[in-house]
Image (cartoon, rainbow, N blue to C red; front, top):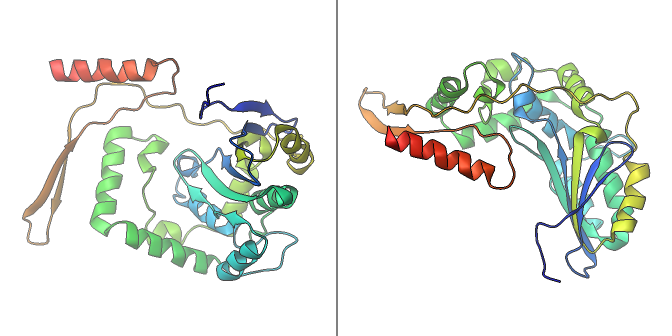
Length: 282
């Protein structure tokens, strides 16, 4: 049989967790990515960066585990022969990835579950804010951040995607509270709002047998509704001008952007082709 790297077996557990499994080879380890379908576009109005702050808080304390610094936590993971990415935040989702020996499959899956679904959410917010500030300053200068936000608003208006991939400034970041983080966690974090991707040496039957009791979920959870995507239109060119303190223009860029819905059977490619043909003809 020809190997298909995109062929996954798909399951939905009683809790609502969607599982995508692929056995790649006879390996003694497996890798997985847990995706929570909540990201920066789900930040509440007036609270930008809340999803990112929540992602940081998840690795700062887990119920039933001793409190550890990040260095201590990494050393503990290494001692267990675990590799665990402590999380990343994107516009539409958060992801938590890692790998472990198949002999420790149950322990690793439970660790992943508890980190994401049983956090203490009682850490020092000032420390987490400082980490985000350092990440922000390493990512872009203040004028670049302002330009990115202005471009998002020009393309998307009041839609939540206008702030996607933008960094919160200090006034907004300092206003976030642990109560905000706990409310967002309760609203979005449940197996019914997650997808788990698994590949490697763990068998399909073994994986499903382990996952069902670990990711049990809540009976009354309702997946939150999201804002509809913006309409598909042929965009106008947007000019971005960066000026130095003297007022002299240092760089000018013109870009086009489309927002395309998920599609199958080549439909997205056709939409892009038609839009480009229309734009170039005009």
